[in-house]
Image (cartoon, rainbow, N blue to C red; front, top):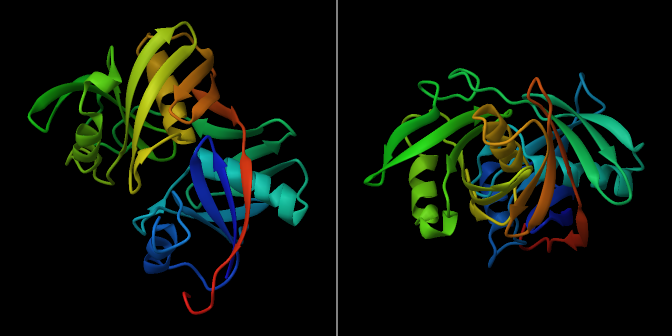
Length: 268
């Protein structure tokens, strides 16, 4: 088994270059930080009839993600670096087709359109600055779908909250039938926001592309920010999200290749 490893601001993924088809158990073993290779997910290239390339995105808990902004940017870099792809192409995530563009300084992904209806998230009812009871608290949340589900909590100081505990509880809240990613966000000024991330199936994460898109879209939708470019600051660094008037989202940020991992056949 051969894997190509890279990270986007500390959010790291393994691209399956060669080896057996991925399974939930194998994804869990590979992503384990102590007994496997370690990663925030596995990207399994697959064929597609509706895009130039296809990918299946595996979470560390063995579940499959509908979309990952950082994962897609890492896959795009891999396609250019390791498969001689042209700089611009489309990728089928299994639920959506996105356009990618790889430049020397950054990778851009057109992430689709943010939606706030209950069916599009999905969530049992539309939640826009709506109260949700969780872990003995009442939080005001915004539920948004960007191809995968997100729950955004705007607050004056994310680190003043037990956000890991709250994120874990919100991930499995019954309001979200497919579980959800969770972000705790502080507006820092025009076009700037700071977030903490609890990622569905992965837990605390230093950076997340789809989370950045969800927070930027939610901030615009609720009038906290204006449409246009938004700098999203995370523990791992900064991603740029452009929120268009129709809530179409463009995600731009760096990818840092780490190297190729050959897995010992005895481990496999």
